[in-house]
Length: 443
Image 1 (spheres, rainbow, N blue to C red):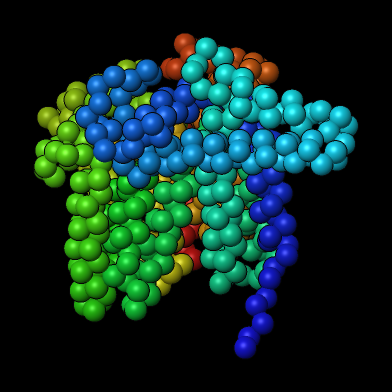
Image 2 (spheres, one colour):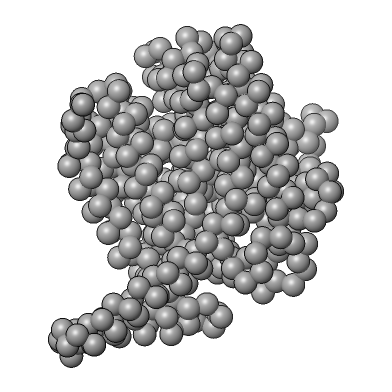
């Protein structure tokens, strides 16, 4: 029997990365996580059935897909499990005379965890921290996936470097430990979908994986054309993907029935209205992309240019991005698919309207893997990741001690439409162009 080889270095890196994030969790709670806590508490109290039909909400109407809302509810269960463990631990220490008086900090922590409410919200600090734990675990899983993916192309040292850069880069811990967002969870299933797609034996699972990714983060929708393109390159694979698509549809039909007593079609019509139609109709939403350069603050994407509205122009540009991405993965091999995924995610974020800053997450993570393999990309990736972190900062203005950075970013305009963000958006456009050129040269 082959002995299992354990890379203790990568295990240690992931452990330290998770500890770092857990230490950051109590520092701040974004308004998004307060809203999501409202949804999660409803699911915790009532279950998921009827969730989207409920009309009474504290902070906001649910506009996230089913699986991620279920995870918000799971966060409250995690809080209860941890709270019970802490109480039992304290009782065991006290009952067995193990020096409870010398560790008063532990009892103060348990009281703070389960008894102190955050600000003027109805949620305990422990409940809000627990909602961040799944994204933090997701960071650990994603770091290991990065390590394994890069290890197939380079040596172990550079693979560890890739995982370490992800775990320590500001954009990653800012997103999970501070903001509490779940983009890494969606990316885990997205990467799994494309990996399975090129493994002919398991291609039928790919549609299931990408469906789960969409139900965690709808941004995975933009990879649909690329997935179909890769699938049709091989008849056997396409047949498997077609059957897998039917399986995914059946699974989603079942999930719809779990969440709602409405018929399937009515439920999904209402769901897409809540997720998409109720969104803002501006060309950019705190996003350093091409629309930040060419349009002003609160520009309606229904405005016409040459008889076509700006939203359609975004789709036209994105269609061109997809054509380039198809050329990058002509040979249907894993590294070519990764290059295509990078271009689709970066290009889609740059060209389509109503993008949020966090939607660049996928491009930055995949770009990291490509940059570790191709050193010519690394300096551009570093700039891209830093601008991404700054872009997220402009969506929250946290930490408040970075007042100097805020003053710089809003110089010459109001808090949203100054010249500095437009310059950073121009740098992003340059980075997309030059990194794409390098990828084509490498291909």
